[in-house]
Amino acid sequence: MNLQTRNKVDAAFSMSSMTDLIFLLLIFFMLTSSFVTPSGLPVNLPSSKASTIEVQKVSITVTKDLLYYIDDRQVTKASLESVLKTKLARPEGVVILHIDKSVPWEDGVYVAGIAASLKAKVSIATVPK
Image 1: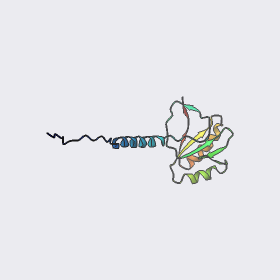
Image 2 (image 1 turned 90 degrees about the vertical axis):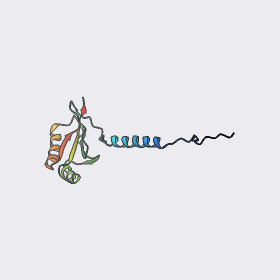
Image 3 (image 1 turned 120 degrees about the vertical axis):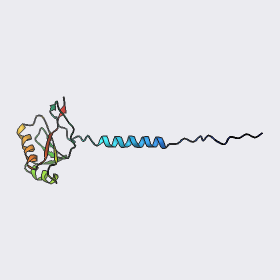
Image 4 (image 1 turned 180 degrees about the vertical axis):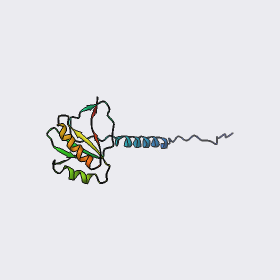
């Protein structure tokens, strides 16, 4: 008597579920990594109780040596307004100020005043306490 089963067990392993899982993890890490955009210049930021994360459009950095940078490119104090005007193509842009805590307030207010005169939303970068 020759008895054979009609259903044979396939020993192959399907990788489709593993591929889906890896793809979802890749998308998750790509999306979450783009939310945090640190400034490329080392600046000693002041601390604050309320610190929120803003999507950064234009970054203005003022170092303790009073050097001005717009998006990691050094500019002079006199050309700050013209360079910022070209960076903010449309009004109501977002400007993040990375100002060293040893810089006098009048230099920070000067930069914020230029950004506000160009109708940009101004935020000051701080570190949480």
